[in-house]
Length: 206
Image (cartoon, rainbow, N blue to C red; front, side, top):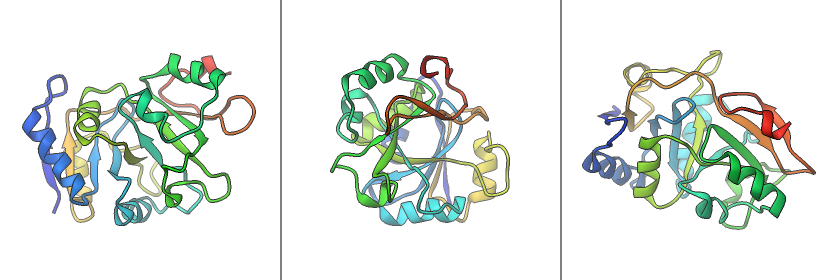
């Protein structure tokens, strides 16, 4: 049964954030709000959590997981970025974008695209998400909480708790999230390629 945490959207309770992060460090899989929509998340060093995300969403091994990062310094530890790409991403973060880039050796192989050796990274513009990341001190491996066969993600924490109670360890709720996932921009080849249009304005990358 998943624990339910009601977190203030502007001033997250430090004790609650600490409790959620303790559960993540103990191997929990959580649902949590972001600046685009709810996401599933676990620690990088939690292969069981990763497989649980794959199972819930019925993902194959070509799915790009996202490393949800607190800031640009942290992001830079996990992907290779040249100067031009650095400037483009820096100008768009924090925000509702996911960037696909070549992974560094700091990224476990199981998180990379098996052929391209790439990974998704993003810096969210959401108070609660950033509080979780600051307390955790490392990225959250994440995937949009979009269930198989459904067109839109769930938007309310209580609904997630009700429907996924048996497969999650915790639900973090700070109010309704949107239904638009992030805009995904692939920088793994020459130039920028928009893979998915979502909550972030794609214009700077066109």
